[in-house]
Length: 114
Image 1 (cartoon, rainbow, N blue to C red):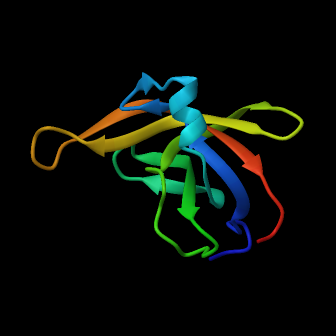
Image 2: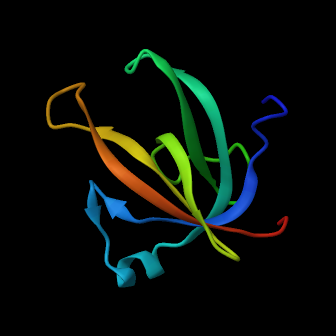
């Protein structure tokens, strides 16, 4: 891990599921605590560098990813206690080995150290 990808402790929720907007009720129940990081990575599928946001579970910075990675991640809004990140995620497609890209947004609430 380089000095530029030190994760931030946060609460987070995905706004969409397979590209479809989740209801406020669904979003309110799906908040999770984890570690947010965002770094540039070379994407072999797009043949270019992209910003990739990752959200890992619990108090372990090396824990499993809670959400699929968010590619071309961009901060589009900042409030007094939250951020909105947007981009796209890749999920397994119906065909063997295929992936499908869906638009996605995350709402992030930074929290203090665990």
